[in-house]
Length: 157
Image 1: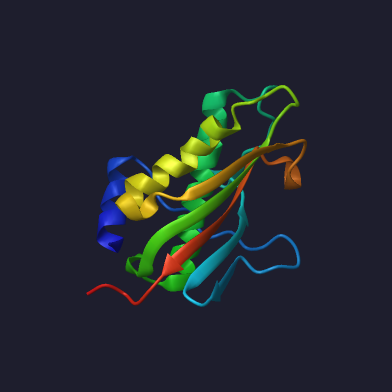
Image 2: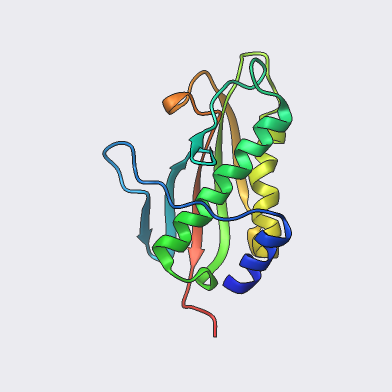
């Protein structure tokens, strides 16, 4: 699966970023009973945090790109923690937080940036439950933050 993911990323013109270190008193990944819980991941492009508010300084397309960047960081954290992405059995749930104005209501469309990436990379195992909510502010002014729950197993041969 790791080779498949690497090929798909290349086909999409994407690459995994370096897994970001925590910015406060938490760990990025906790593994319990076959599930990996990933702390909220922020969108980084060329090493810089993507900031701004949907419905104000960012377009829907920019929000979708920020969500896709969060999705890439989730996969980077998984790869760092697991070593082998073939251990991923299912993306169980994504929690998507969108920095948005009170009248912006397209949070689900923003979240699709990450959701569609998970399906592109993991196929049917990338289909997941999801919440997408608007919030008035995110850490460091980030445009989007996404946390995840992922089912894992033994590496595939």
